Amino acid sequence: MERMTDEQPVRWSQATVYPDMWADPDVDPRNRDGANPVEGELATLQDFLGDYRLTFRMKCEGLDAEQLARRSVPPSTMSLLGLVRHLAEVERDWSNWISDGDPLLKLYGAKDADFHGAVAEQAVVDAAFEDLEREQAATDAALARHPDLSERLGKDAIAVRELMVHRIDEYARHSGHADLLRECIDGRVGQ
Image 1: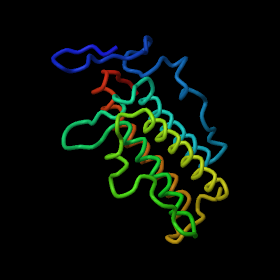
Image 2 (image 1 turned 120 degrees about the horizontal axis):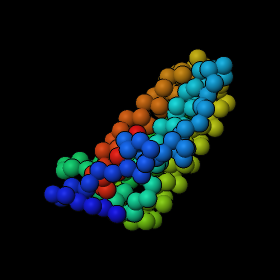
Image 3 (image 1 turned 90 degrees about the vertical axis):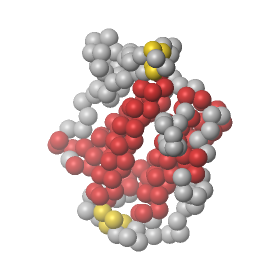
């Protein structure tokens, strides 16, 4: 339910224990033990990446196609759906970085097509989330074959560690964008 005051959604959270949280701690899927330091750096990096991916996904839940495609502020083309498409495109780019073969083609075409093509159609929404899951799985599978974080991959010899940190950075940055976009859509806030 979207409540408005002066054309702006009223801020709200589903959490009842801590009102500044997205969900109550006992039902928040990100609240688990996480990687044990004994498991090492790779497990820690994977844990952080997983949490940011999940946070981003949670910011998109419960919205319809129009809400997901709603642009932030003119002239920006940014929307939650655009970010989903962008992250799918970036995952594909990362796969290209670590490959020695011919690069995979862009998913959505020319520069910024990921954002420009983020239109309020359920088929576009469904395809975007399918693309994101597929590209995440492909990059994860490719990197799983290289557990040594110091190993250098691809034509540019990027270290696995550098790529993992870059991935965390990308999802963290866009989760921040998603926070603001979601608040503008329906007023929902929280970590």
